[in-house]
Amino acid sequence: MKKIISIALLVLLWSCEKPPSEEYKPELNIFCLLRTNAKEQRVEVSRSYKMDEPSDYDLEDVIVILSGDNFTDTLIPETDTPGIYKDSVEIKPLHTYHLLVSAKDMDTVRGRTSVPGDFEIIYPEEGDTLSSVEDSIILKKSEKARGYYIIISIEGTTYSGSYSWTESQDTTQDSLVSYHIPTCFHIWESGSGSGIIKIIAMDTNYWSYRHKWDWEEEGIRLQEGIEGGLGVFGSAVVDSVRIFIKRE
Image 1 (cartoon, rainbow, N blue to C red):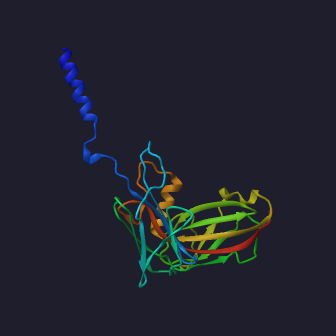
Image 2 (cartoon, one colour):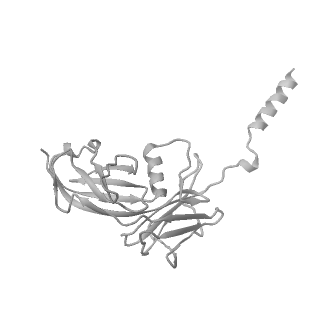
Image 3 (cartoon, rainbow, N blue to C red):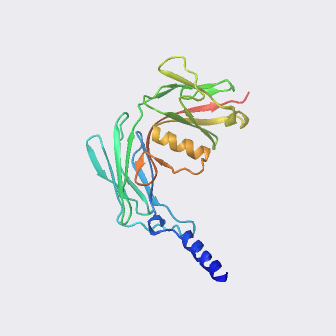
């Protein structure tokens, strides 16, 4: 009887071991948001880690290549910050760009993004005063944008939220879209002050990434616009206006 129990325990322990093919393998983790008005484009490169593994940066022979619009550029590593690669590259609306990232002993990551079109904040205009909870932000639409990320900063306090075409949308013309300033931003409770409204028109990749991140969906792989690794390769167009908030 003792022999039978011993054999059963050995079988159980053996079955709990992972076969070699299922051993943990780290993956490259990429974050890149191309912006049309940025002086330089940046790519953050790291890797995934096991729960009990030190997260020190240890990637070697990293190459980051950005291409599109008849150019191919190998980005330059930032001297003071490991894992940051950058260069002065002009990104144009409604153009498609590709990313390639490789490192020693890691699978190569490839990405693709299509940049949304230019847009404009119609209301409020530069220097306008907002004084009512009924105020809305009116935009001239960005072609091919999946949604918008709205950031309102008042006297150093920042409020933000992400919106798709099908949410919080009031359209009166095909070329315009209106977003009522959400009461959850609480900007009317902060008192009067100067501030800025920044709108980010997002491509599908970055919108999906923000949506999953904001809602903290569990059990998913954050992998938007890339293959062969984790992270996001997206693009955006930004517009902003300076305003004044007057509490009624």
